[in-house]
Length: 543
Image (cartoon, rainbow, N blue to C red; front, side):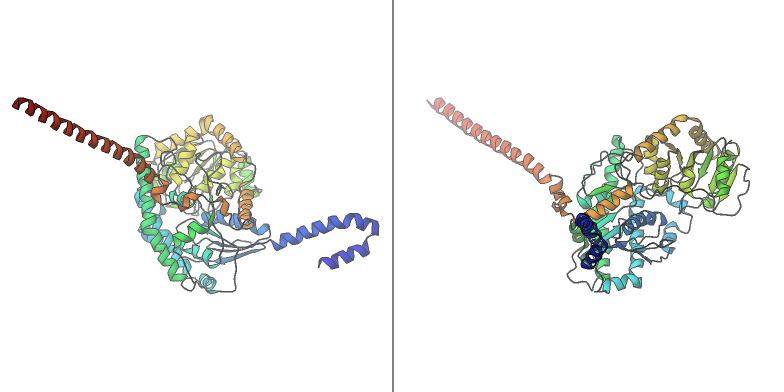
């Protein structure tokens, strides 16, 4: 191919021009061909029925496809419309498992559970959907095939570790991608320090400045989670992997696969905004990767917001929680407060009508959230505190009122409270007085808007965008064949070695043994001396 191109260039160019330009053109051509040759085949496995999670995962995969890599993605939410170099394989899930956990109540009922229940139930829900995904013919065909080859596997860090078997099958490095700021065992996976003294558990709602009681609970809940993960969850995942990857020869334990093959972990923390903590070079924070460039609003919505001289309040409980499932008393509390305000209200409400709807309130089953939050007239965002929503609010500098229900939502809202970018209202505390109080505080106290704008500037002030960072480090792993040089030696230490308990034992026991020996020697000397003295006394008495 190169020879044909060169021949054509020689015939088209004058000899002198060819002598000058041909070397440069050959460099450009070689670079282009090298780029095509280096295009990798990347497998993404995201078997969890949460659209918000897949938004994060698919954004990175789309970015990799745009770079010329060939990506294959297993998820419940294919891209619409499809894009080049991106092969979607749709997974379907039976949501009755989640309904059973909720006992057929609304999703709001999950907010009534304690932290220990949240740890346990998350370790059950994830594997339930992983098992369903394994039963799809497309997954089984990929396990059985001998014709496919992937250079990299990207796996959701959400209780689906059995799929790490693909990394062993394809002899490929593994990247974990977390849809949250990170689980305690995610840090342990790569040996990243995560002290319970100032790194709050996602199952808590603490800040990085904890009281003694909070540090005690944080240690207990994280220790409980780690033990449950190691002693119950991973053996179950290993059994599941062996059941479905039985055609793959020489399959190690799932723990061995993920420790030996994990090259990198992406977490959804926000540099400069999330609580500072130690970060190894192979733990990369890509919070905000899902925030897309702002698009023009529909004409009617734009006019509605442009004409809001007193500002706009946007209210949405995300994709998994339905505002229509608030109790009648809670809906009345919202409506009464909204009717007293001068601001216009946009409320993502899943039914066609809202009884008692005031004139300043507009409802819809869907709103373009990112584009709305970018509008200069938005003065407040009322949300469930999900990580996508809170990061979009911070990116656009909008103060927040959070009504956290489950998962990491309380922790996300605690972060915003500490930043003075918002307020938190417990679901069980919603009534006329409490809701009106927090709304009026948020829109009348200028510190919240001021701080939101300041944090937005911090969030945006990065050398790379989150997507550029994610793509760079993914390609870094590909270029360096798994980037083993980034892996910490901590992953090869047992827990007692990592905690230096063997060293502590030596430092305590050796001096203790020396002291004991000295004391025993002194005791024997004293006893011997005493016997000599007694013997001398008796001898003198006889004389």
